[in-house]
Amino acid sequence: MFEKPRRLKSRLHRHSPASADCRTLKDIFVKKRLLILGGTGDAAFLAIRASQIADIEVVSSLAGRTKQPLTPKMGTVRIGGFGGVAGLVAFLLVSAALGEDRPIDLLIDATHPFADQISANAAVAAAECNIPYLMLVRPAWEMVEGDRWIEVASHSEAATALSAQSQRVFLTIGRQELAAFAGLDVMWFLMRAIDPPAPNTPVPNGKLLLARGPFSLEDERQLLLEYHIDTIVSKNSGGAATYAKIIAAREMGIPVVMVQRPPIPDVEQVADVEGAISWLISQ
Image (cartoon, rainbow, N blue to C red; front, side):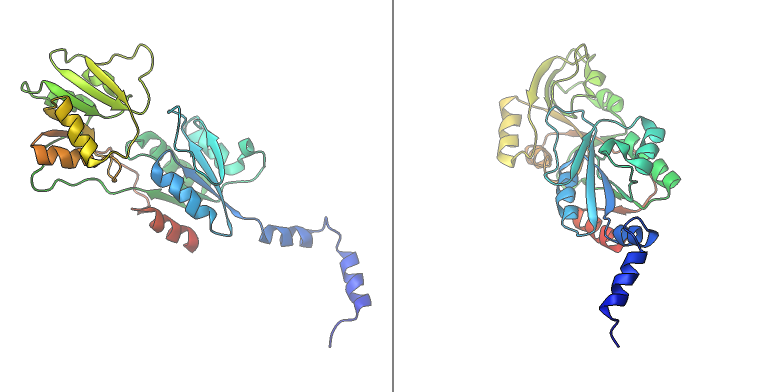
């Protein structure tokens, strides 16, 4: 039998908007807050895809090291570091910098494969805060028939590995590692980066090109021919955006000094954005 309107009114009167029951009802509709550690194309696309999930609120964090970062088109964006593990823990627990005293519920690290420090900090901070944590790690490139790779563990090793026969070298390692090659005065370097190096940074002799991928195979072929490149130095970043230079080097028989990725935390990982979306839905 249905309850009479008078009794329903009386029940509502006993529970004011400030009551515990009303707060519980409100909490049901509060979205889970996801923090994406970004700065990559994968991270920007993930922010769009995750924003399409009804119960997810997306916050993207960019390190701010480039003048024109890959800013996500959806969700809230913050720029700047956290101040180590302690600063990241504080942000995860409160997120006061976003104007609300609300914690982060989920964390996805979608940074560059060589951003090993923030990845290490994120793994520790997520464990301390006991929140679900995922790494989106795009697969590394693998050597195939025709490649002439010299694999090294660091940029300093890459500088050492450049043979005496290398005279015109294409450096595609970004701006932050150029100093490792500054002492190789007998060589000429074509350096490609998104932004110029910081003032007073030692750089090798050569030319600096400012450009952001993706780069086409035809453009990479032309670049190698135009500058008479005989060796390439590259990070094993993975992905399609800068892989064309590896194909061009293979076709032209140019050796590639390949800097291998640093170790990453032993945590749950996926290889692409759709894998990350599946993980989010399962939480």
